[in-house]
Image (tube, rainbow over all chains, first blue to last red; front, top):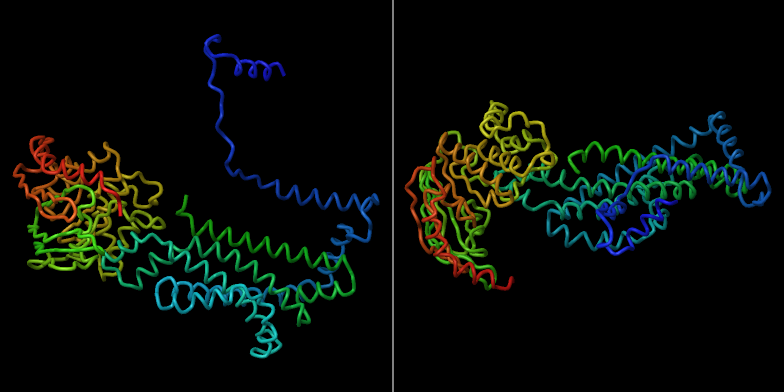
Length: 279
Length: 248
């Protein structure tokens, strides 16, 4: 208390009346700091708040399910074996669709980045495709690829494809031209320049595009499963929702959140490994 | 192998950058090119190595490149141009990967030893100082056994002390193995320390103003202030005019 008062007075006093004093510190802050527990803490606090509020009665029982009931539902789901029955088809669709879409997106994005003709021809097409809600195209895909897995793969792939294309060609455009000129000056073949200079140089941009692409893939996965699937997390949520079974609905939503967090963690891990050369 | 430049003329749009440049770059010597900023030094160098096509005139290779030469015209860039995702040895290897070589790793070890980088073979560029990065780039250039090294202000991105050290390194490398080089710089002290011949270009459009031969051997050359003063005398007014010019 006295300390702060003294400092406060010392700063306001005209300088020539005082003796030597330390220069006040004005730096610091404005730097992103990491705290791995803060995120978990916020999450726990919200869950605890809802649980206590519902039990104490100052949140109406109609608004939200009890978190502990949701957890019990989840345990039941796991013990009955239904969890895997829903999760495995969903994961398969997610992995197959997103892989196809991401690979095609990286390929087309690289072509656009490297060839003027591809850029002139394909960028307007991608721009036209990007804002279309892909779920609107599901009936089309059902006609093309059948009601089964094919249409779901195609939908998820298309959803991943568009952000990957945009991220990839942007990243290829931003590869340091002096590095490419260096490659040419050493007589490297075209293929070597693309493989060893362009693609690694574009990798940071490609990976941040992958984050967006995978998030969109999860959204479309659920949407596709809601429109036509017997098993899958989307089907599970839809069924729970139509019965107003909030516990099961929330259990499904939690699974999706976990899937999202896990995907993001995998991308972060890949980034740490592949982009070790940065910073 | 010598290089001969004949009547090189070039324009960027309406701006003439090079005007009828003729030069001789004899094997085993270092030719420095100096001139006020914007006189087309770097353009000239890009044309020497075939990275840019001149509007008129030509660059000729006279004689065959030496035995075992993988890339006759090899650049050392001002900003090093190292791949940040490859370590030191990997950056040197890049220049060799497109060639079938039985002893690739031996070449890498040799050039890293010559540039005193052996213990940093596994380091990434971001861990290296500017001077070390440029030594990696020099090692990479040496690895392909160039007939002519094309050096584009190789020391300009470095601080004055590092520059001194690297000049000594370059002189040491030249004495061990007399490489041919075209060395573009705006720093007259570098030009008189390293050049057997200094080509002074005029302001845009770049013309050959004067070619100064320096006969003193590279080792033990001092600052050669008289030569520097002479060069500066040739350039001063034009450098001032270039400085006062608006950029296009």
